[in-house]
Length: 168
Image (cartoon, rainbow, N blue to C red; front, side, top):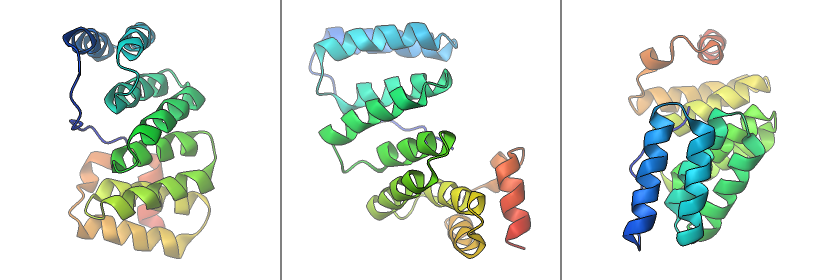
């Protein structure tokens, strides 16, 4: 699961911020390809703003362009490798491309940066479960639960259902 966050980055120019807001509004209406085009214009103005790469990555993911989403997050991470959400979301995109070991590495990095976010642990657990690493999956699942992750918001996801059954 992606983490929705307010990123701690500011814009250097009003123009880039205005363009980014326009892109965000397009994305909220499900116009992801248009939003990507608009985010690219903002990136031309502020090529060193990690938030823009994070935001464009989310839009790429909505159109299933996972390699582009990963590339955008690679750039965000190159600009700021201390932000765990970048690694969590890149892990999700690796997972969607069946690159489970890369996903695990990214989730572990996110956890090393912030061990209090249950979403990172549940994503790690799902990936371990996919690889039939049941003990690792259940350990990560239990950690997510201990952090107070609300599993009800996941109850329609087949991966979570499989994981819960495995950990009983």
